[in-house]
Image 1 (cartoon, one colour):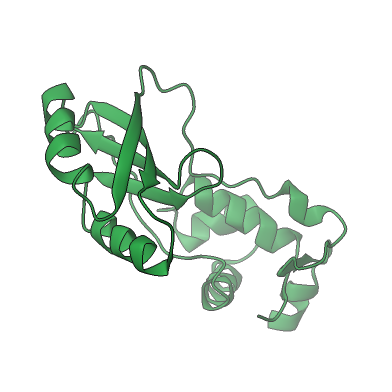
Image 2 (cartoon, helix red, strand yellow):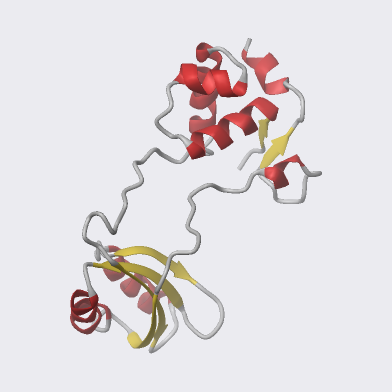
Length: 181
């Protein structure tokens, strides 16, 4: 994959977009100090490069009746591509599973799950999650209180000297803006 070059305007734009994804190009331009047309071109370029992966509205699960958040540590019976693929295909079909990560450590997978209440969570676990292909056992933790949850990625590391395998290069100046004009 080619290296993507961004400048301070792109960095400020990405930060502003993460915090207020429904902002107009004019509003983003005021924040970043560029014109709406420059914002539009930059958003297109960043989207084409895959840095902006998509756009979504963030919904409040509690207000929508999903009052339980849990984390499940899943261990598979056997390890191998066939078993992992079967589990991953099946877990992808569960809408209550918001995130599924293959992890190192004591578990093979970590799931973030939402449910309406504890009985609904129990039913989900007993009748669906524990019956997923290849599951040996599951250990769950119920979230008691949300202390911090964010979708905003830290971007400061991009301004540091480039590291090997880093796919985004920061110029610090306005090179990307100059290339657009």
